[in-house]
Image (cartoon, rainbow, N blue to C red; front, side, top):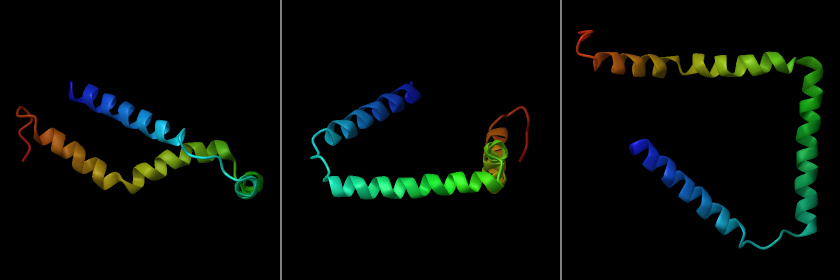
Length: 91
């Protein structure tokens, strides 16, 4: 029930943000050109990196690196949950 309430609240906030974005004025063509130019640089950099790095490996390694970097939090959370089970009797 709490999760459902949180999801509904998230949807309301999401809808409110997009309702506000519809009221904003359009950007000038110069700003749009600059943003396109920046995105072109970023995508060119990614395609250049693809020459040196296999992206199927990157798709596998990113979750593993995030998990290793957060291993202490994962272990603390697992131990907190295990300690709450009375049958296990871990102090």
